[in-house]
Each structure stands twice: as structure tokens, then as C-alpha cells.
Image 1 (cartoon, rainbow, N blue to C red):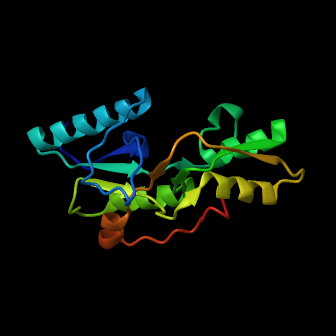
Image 2 (image 1 turned 30 degrees about the vertical axis):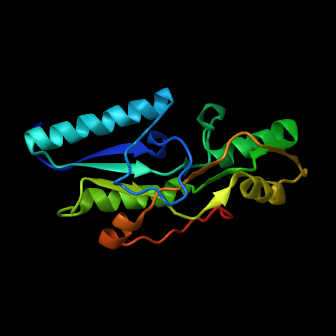
Length: 186
């Protein structure tokens, strides 16, 4: 409110629902159908209104399927962490054979958010932070299975067809982007 510094709002790929044959760009209109995604959409909207009406330096960073190593059970959210937990507890991993997405590891995301925060200026008010590396739930389940001590069974499910990958092209062109943690390392 003091018009000092930059406010960076962290949003999520959850603002999108459905199947996107092409990578999702910043120009794609959000269409969340779940409450959490709708809350992120509202946050983006509030930031846009304040930026435009108050001429504030507010940037939205939309994160694509963020994954991390949880320190507590209640922190298990991402696909990879959920699959690992299921592997340990149930000796099985459920994987939707028709769901394709990309994930970004927390360490990479933090670096790219930091670059947004320290930049003298930004060309845009919305950036997507993504590895843009396509992977299916089944491929991810096979990676988890390869690293598991007790080989869990992969249970293939055919629930919905969806491809959800955020394009990181805008961010990459302005700030540069090098992914350190690819899906096989995560």
C-alpha cells in the first residue's frame, strides 16, 4: 500500500481445469472448477485490480504442479509425494493413464520466484513457472516404482483425459530458465 517494492502473488496451475492439447500460456483464460482453483483465480483478480487501480508493482507467479519432499504427513500434496506415500503404506500406486502434466520442484521454483522479486523491472504482470517437461501419471508412477525398496504394484486407472502443462516461454525469454530437478531426480 505504500507503493514501495514489488508484491509477488503465488498462484497455481489449479486455476485451469480440463484438457489442453497445447501448452497453457498466460493469455489462456483461467477456468477452475474446484474451490481451491477458484480461490487462486480470485487472488489473481484482486492483484490485477490493485495493480491497475493503484498503479502498484504487483506480479503474479503461477506455479505448475509444485512438488517437494514433505517433512510431515500433512504436507503431502503433489503427485510425486502422494505416490511415494501410497507406495510405502499400501504397496501400490494408482496412476491415471490419461493424465499428462509437468511438475516443478520447490528448489527450482524458489530460484525463479527470487529472480522475479529482485528484477529491477518486469515486462509483464503474470508469469508461469514451470519445467514444461511433459510426464504422465503412469510414467511418474514407474519412476517411483524404480526407486522403491519394495516394488509396489502400479494400478492403472482410466478416469479422465487431461493434458495440463503451463508454458514457461514468457519467463524464459525475460529471465532465463534452467531446470535443475527433472522428474527423475524429484
